[in-house]
Amino acid sequence: MKNRPAQLIAASLMALTLLSGCGGGDGGGRPSVEELSGAMQEEGNVLNAGLTAEQSDCFAQALIDSDVSDETLQAIVDNDEDYKGNDADEEAMQSMSTDGLAECMAG
Image (cartoon, rainbow, N blue to C red; front, side, top):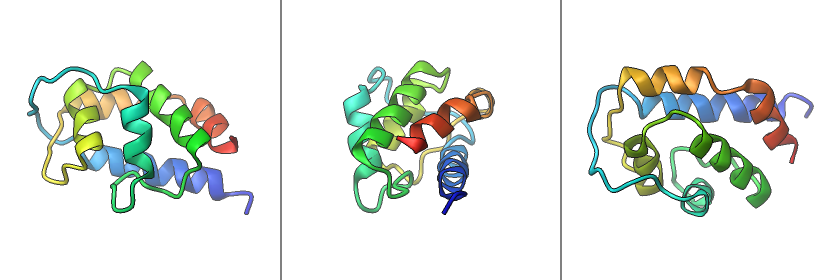
């Protein structure tokens, strides 16, 4: 299963990209690493890719450290499948380091 981390990264980024189409949000501020990590581990969350708690924490920290908007991150926490992000979020996700995310998946 050598390709499993790469598959998880690809699936997670694809799901995150689907959340970022065109603006919106409640302006509630940036979620915490704990909130994002917990959401990614919840059954039915768009970013639940079977990650361990350690992997989820690492990926959540990478998202917090990225330029992905607060609104998009909150949509992940809320599992808001109707949320549409914006082009800036898509660019921010594409610029996230694949190497760094691979380290997260290696746990």
